[in-house]
Image (cartoon, rainbow, N blue to C red; front, side, top):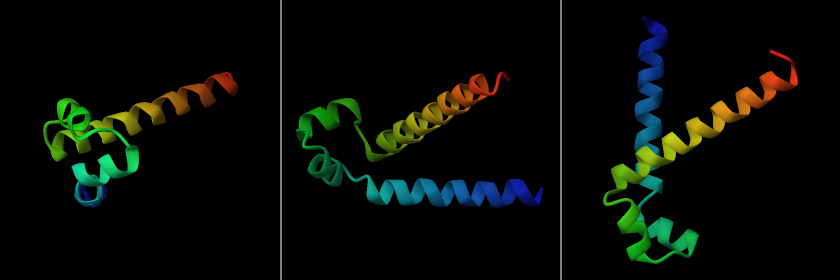
Length: 73
């Protein structure tokens, strides 16, 4: 139970930090994309944060699978 509580708290903190850092304005500025492009794909900052986490998890799974193949697992 302790591990789950800690991981839940860490996940909540991560999501909160992502939302703070991934404002639409900040993403527009750093990506060089238009406001319309960002808003069309992600109608809210919450949707953007959800997609960021999904993207990172998918990349992590690909990395794990690639490494497993390299080790013949």
